[in-house]
Length: 66
Image 1 (cartoon, rainbow, N blue to C red):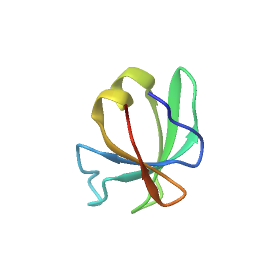
Image 2: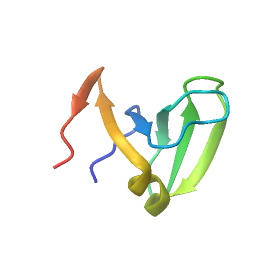
Image 3: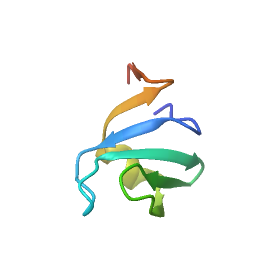
Image 4: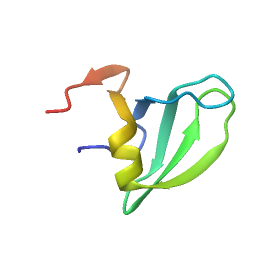
């Protein structure tokens, strides 16, 4: 999956604050992401993040995930 720093991803599960959108801060074996609702930063394994992504936004526009 083609994910870059500063992309915003919409996840399948809702964060406890109510937001589904996360800003990508770091890409590698792990993703570092910041919740767009509350600002919490988390690091998750690439495999877990990639299977839970619904949509990717780059520069405010949806990116096709083919």
